[in-house]
Each structure stands twice: as structure tokens, then as C-alpha cells.
Image (spheres, rainbow, N blue to C red):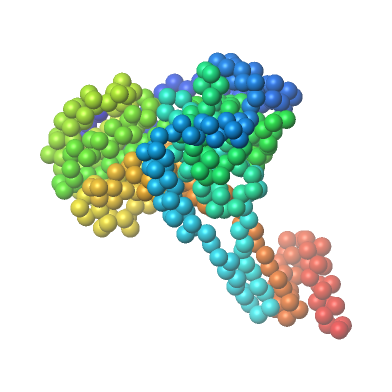
Length: 429
């Protein structure tokens, strides 16, 4: 990891840059596949599944028996862990439901807003070297709470055409019945366009590699919404003298093992904490099964010594991390000053892994600095908010003259007339 001591503030922005790894220009490829799916449907999806995943499935959709049989292979221990996580995620997301609030802006003019679930949503679950069954919980649970009528799940098959058993169990547990063995660009294209087998959806959720990310961007041009801009995983840790260096090192490695393009950052006002954490990193990384991946990520990562925790918070807000850990006995003293972060973990026992799996918060979060303007996935992500208003005769008499004046000023006489004709009718009663 690059170590930077007391950087000048005019260099902070450069230090916040994410690693610029080579990324293929995939726009032409995604548009080609989308176009083929629009013309050939399932045949195109199967063709590209064979090309990218090495298997051409006889059937894209899993049967109820296949889901049940696959889910049954999950160990009792893992089932119980997933059930615990599900309960906590449900509890946290259930409190996000909003009641209708109505206001009379002036006598006779009532306005309110009501929630409506997005009818059809698609969720994409990666199934490669790290099949993310936890993401099934993070997306299906808020979708169910929101009231989405149709939830489509796509995940890539293995070379035998099978789906990871834990993904099937998590889907079964959350009530997802429409599961398709298709991944990559072709999965996003199928959910964006619809095929003979895979329904068209209105919004697509879920993480993925650069192919999936490019496909989601292409889906936008077909009028399909996506959850949020995606990118490599990242973590920023702020550690003061009360932090535990072993814990901090473990947290940094927990994100570094995601991929070589992940980035982790340690900010501290303590040289001793930095020294001890660096020592712990060197020791812990040796024992990781994904050691090589983590080491590549650490090359693009940083340790920065700043003057105090106020500076650390200011730097973090500029960086806008996906995950932020404040490793301090006094972490809660700094929460009001955190303005840009996807999800925040307070204190020495709040490891980021808890949010990834089972504490209850959602792990689908904005990366690459998008936490300056985006929130993580929540029940709101699966909801549209529709405004309503009701205006009585008295209400129109109260606001009508102002509308007439404003419409005239904008030279929109038909707008004015829609009010004037009503006011005249009221006067003539």
C-alpha cells in the first residue's frame, strides 16, 4: 500500500482517485447482444450463454423441482445463518415503509404522496468465483416489502448448467420463483427487453463484472431503470489511537479480496496505529485463499497520515467511500460530520462484513465516489412515489388568480383558461 504522510489539502483530490485499470470498450458488444436478443429472443440468450459460460442450457427457467432439489443441498448450518440474516434484513427494511402524509397547503388545497411498488423488477446475482447468495437477500427482501408483483432472478450457470445451491435456497426462502440460468450481458438484455421465456422488467438491480455493468448502462437507453452506478468494491477506515490494528487490517483485507480492482484506504492521526496495522496486514494476507487477489488490490490502495480525526472525516467526505469504518471508541462523536458514504460502521466491533451479510443494512451501495449523490438500495429503490391533490371550489378561488397571472406571464393562455373557466362557473352558480 502507498503511504502518504500529512498531505497538503490541495493534493487530496488526486489521492481520492480510484485505480484506473484497463476496461474494455463494451458498448458495441452490449448493443450487438441487445439487438440480437430483441430479434431472436431465447435463441440469442442461449447462444451467448454458450459463448460466455461454456454451456447451452436446454431450458432457461428452472423448474420448481430443480429449485427445491438444489436448495436442499445446502447444509443446515448455512441455512440457519441465512435465516438469521433474512430476519435482520427484514426487520431493518420493514421500518423503511412510509405512511401517507397529507397537507392542506391553503384552505381547500390538499396535497399528498402515495407509494406504489414497481410492478416488475429484475435482480442479477453473480455466480462466478464468489456466488453472492447474500445479494439475493439484499434485493429480494426489500422488493417483497415494497410489494413488487413480479421479481425475476437471473444468475449464470456452471459448466453443467446448474445454479449454486445457496443462491437457490436464498431465493426459495425469500419467495422468488422465477429463476433463470443466464448471466452476463445476455441476462441484463433479456430482463431489459423480454424474451419468450424471460419477462421484461422495469428496473434491474444487482452487482456484476464490467460486462454486467456495461449492459446495465445500455439498458438505460432502452428505457429500463437500474439501481445505481456500479464499480469495484471499496472501503475506507478511519482509525485513531483507540483502534485495534489487527481488526483494522482484517477489515481492509475483507474488501481487498473482492477483486484486483478493489481499493482500500486507511486514514489515521496515529503513526503507531499505521505501523501496527501495516505489520498485521503483512501477517494476515499470507493466510488468505484469495491472497493474490488481495495483494493486487493493495497495490492500488493507500495509507494516509493526517493531523487529526477532523481532517480524516473531511478527507473521507471528499473520497465518498462505499463503506466507511470509524475504528474508534468515540466513533459516535463523529457521525454528524459524515456527509458522503454508502454505509457507515461505528466502533471497533462493527466490522464491514456484518453489513455484507447479517446486521440488517443493505450491502448494495454506491461506489467510485457516487456516494456524494446516491444512496444504497432500500425499500424506496423498489417504489415509485405518486403525488395526489384535491382542490375544492374554495381552494380554486384561493389559488386561481395567482395561477392566471403566472400562466399569462408565461404566455400559456390555455393554462390560464383551465382556471378561468372554472372560476366563472363558480361565480355563476
